[in-house]
Length: 76
Image 1 (cartoon, one colour):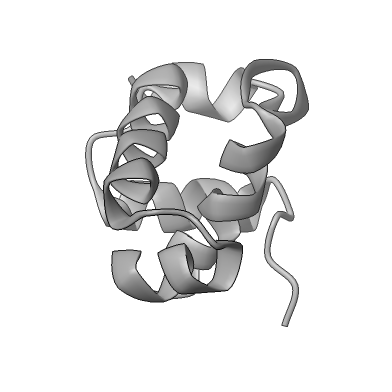
Image 2: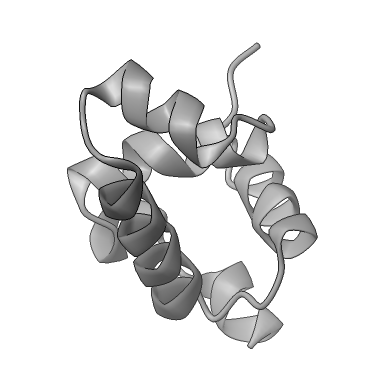
């Protein structure tokens, strides 16, 4: 749920790869773009995205973007 996401330290709960993928998703990159950028398959990106959402208790992409902004995981 949203309360869990607000109090969760992403660096303790997410893997290194998930921490790479989360900001890319939040910036609007598609699964294929992320896969090409990180040299992994689209299925791998989809799996990581699912794990991120589950671990953080997020239900939508807007929640993921909000989380990334609050936790200062986005660099422009």
